[in-house]
Length: 434
Image 1 (cartoon, rainbow, N blue to C red):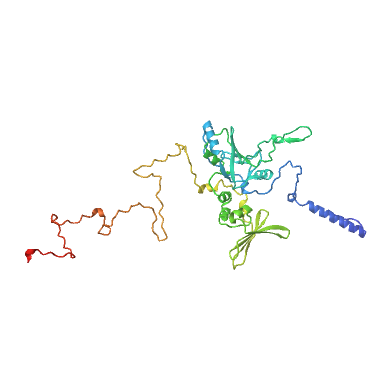
Image 2: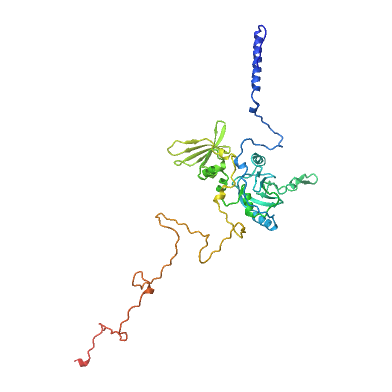
């Protein structure tokens, strides 16, 4: 924008005012020339009707799951398989592979399909309703409802209170006021998971149902540390199992990696408050873990006789971002499932186990692995040989008494052996000898 003055000489005061006016217009024109794409609009909702939302990339634990591949039977669910599902899955315990939200709606998982909600809507539901179960925590199937096209699992008591409607009903007489019909003071903190099918529920076995919901709940036998680390990326899992603390870890990760600290201190770095967790005592290696909020922002490692090493670069957050597909269950390759009781094998896909015979061992039985001790001697279990019996009468060292011959008998066995005279008795001479 260009302003041109045409005319005679101007008053100095008028010229100054004109220059200020022109400068203001130029500044306004430059401000309006900035592209609107760089503008940032912040909208604040004070009504409380719309749930809060999160912008930007979300954590990988809220990303879309990788679909499972479970062979579904074509036959519909009958009464026998229905009772078998209720009997096997009622009160069954597992470990959460993802954060499970509260709320009446919960999560919906399609059989061999996708999860709803996923991504940012998943995170928004967590923010709006809260977390019922954290990843790695134990979860219990409190109830299972079998409907026409879906299985509804109530987890940890379910998201609805026991007396959902009666708690809003109050009864009173006269001037004594009103009292609620049911008011036990408890609030529902559970979650709900719906397993949906296309047309009908097939005749599934309990093991097939567990495989279908494995991306969300793992029913393998694990320790608390293993259950939590199985929900993390491989690199981060190995760091926790190696007792390493990385910048960007959460408080739970630090506790699983190093345990509770020896001492804690709260300090201020300018205007930022932080908490210092200290592990170890000199002359051992001492770790100073600085935490702000729920994240590690600085790690200082002080070794005896060396200069302290300080780490401040966040290496954990890029691992937790939703990049690619989230793992279904990384621990299933390293676990072994034991099937107890009466196991129904599919004769079209599974061969029966051959019966053992007395003539030869079962072909499925594997020989014992050969190991050696520190001297290189084989430690494989061999046949057991009981010791041979022996007596003290053996004349030959190491000979078997059963193979020995009896002692030789003298040839004149009928004549008695003469007894030598006793030296203490006098010898009597007969009278004819004189």
